[in-house]
Amino acid sequence: MCGIVGIIGGSDVAPRLIEGLKRLEYRGYDSGGIAALANGGIERRRAKGKIIELETRVREDPVRGAIGIGHTRWATHGVPNEANAHPHANDRVAVVHNGIIENFQVLRRDLLDDGHVFASDTDTEVVVHLISQEIAEGVEPIEATRRALTRLEGAFALGILLRDREDVLIAARQGSPLAIGHGDGEMYLGSDALALAPMTRRITYLEDGDWALLTRDGATIRDLDGRDVERPEHLTGLSGAMIGKGGHRHFMAKEIFEQPQVIGDTLNAMFNPANRTITLPDLPFDLATVPRIVMVACGTASLAGMVGKYWMERLAGVPVEWDVASEFRYRAPMMADGGLAVFISQSGETADTLAALRYCKEHGQHCLAVVNAPESTIAREAHSVLPTLAGPEIGVASTKAFTTQLVVLACLTIALGRARGTLGRAEEARLCTALSEVPSRAAEVLHHAERIRAIAQETVAPARDVLFLGRGTSYPLALEGALKLKEISYIHAEGYAAGEMKHGPIALIDENFPVVVIAPSDGAFDKTASNLQEVVARGGRGIVLTDPEGVARLGALTPDVIALPAVDPFVAPILHAIPLQLLAYHTAVEKGTDVDQPRNLAKAVTVE
Ligand code: M6R
Image (tube, rainbow, N blue to C red; front, side, top):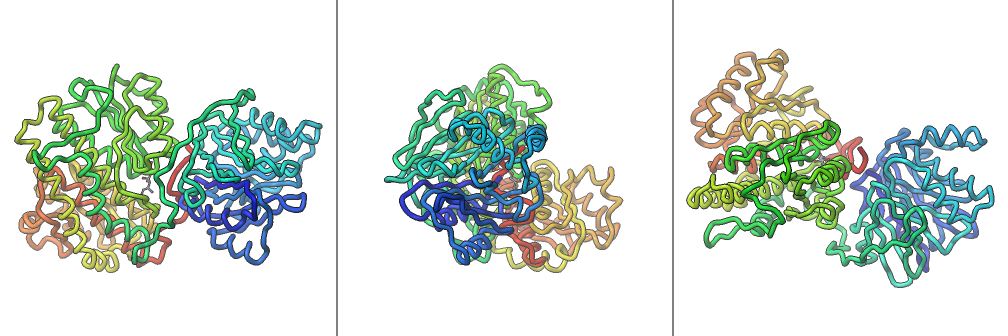
């Protein structure tokens, strides 16, 4: 969370800092700010709210200076207001920060005892005072910065301006991502390569423990003992063009409607239509002998992993342990020697998922990442990568990333099953055929958008609470439907295994309580239909996602039934995700919430 940008250049940097912040706004958007060195001092502008507010502020009161830093914030310490917005600064030092300085309270207490006065409630401000204190004691500013950095614990990516060093911009990384951009007579700093793409494609990623001195001619990267370290320069494939909404009202709508295309793109990288087989890239381990798999991720990505668990256990006969990353890494999980650990992430920067990956590496697991951002930290640190080809996902709610994650996990399941002998040739061909039909079936599902909009407006938007039910692979989808609805519409929603309903949530059901039931006509259909009967019998309003056979079997049980295309149950979760996304989307639009940037959330969660 939080986005950082910095430029040391030859002309005024403020307009480009703001452009960079707009490209980083997906990381947090509760306040923003920039600072630049001009006329021998630090000039700073900050504003509560989105970057557009900061842009207005800077237009009214321009900032000059050819070296500067900028920040878009997702609040951790201190409410989102102007005082807590970054950069934090005094007359000597300005700092932008992404992460959490875990020992800030101890540092702050010491600094207060030494007479420092704090202007914000943030953890970040201690960095300003630590550096200033060293300088006040006569230490040269760059050495003062190095000394301050050695006192910080926790996770940080920092950009630092020193009043007396117009020739140097300082960067430091411990845990939170940070990239250096190489220009012509200019150098840049950014939370990711996307922010820097309009200025340069030449990128160096800092590693944990690095700090860097950027001058107009290049960068020197050091460890905290002051030794120079070498980090390679990459050519990023990211485009500098601003990503548009393609005629849609929101990024989320655009991304939902892109799914037939990106599902096809992702599948085509692994699917051979000539012989209906799956070919994965070369992997540095043997799928046939993997004793056990752990599947770890956060949020929606973790729910893709849960679907993957159901698939791999049933079709490839391999034990799969599933967990959310924030729990997994703290519970001393059992891992088999030579086991496979799969990490799923859209951003490739999620702090808990990254930490779990590092933990599994230390414990001798083969680490395989399913990521959408090919240059991300998780992609770089994993032993191997199976990419989702969803393209940039801007809306905070994950949509096309989820369905492409499912496609990759489906392909991995088939490859595992073939390697382990649980899937014969004919069975592999059948599953591949089912997968190959998903792009066109997804396009058919999108034809239901208007009907789903009507249900969202009439039944879901007025509700206070919504329950989602499913069995088998529809259970993780129930969790995903609930997550999607609550994050963008702010309606309380719960996902439940349908069979568990009578063990508690059934007490909630009345005529104001919509229950979304995901019921493809698979082996669990009749049992799920019984659960729906129980809802209807108590006056609850069932909204059912099924297929033509399911419609026939349900009869007139409830009026709100969506008949999705008939497909092999194997691929049903990929298709059933789409109406859940549309339901959440249209409910949020009806409620007038900020669909693409819902309150309190950020697209990349880079703090624990
Ligand atoms: O970038 P990641 O896939 O690692 O992100 C994981 C979650 O933060 C993310 O899926 C989150 O739950 C979404 N906002 C859900 O729509």
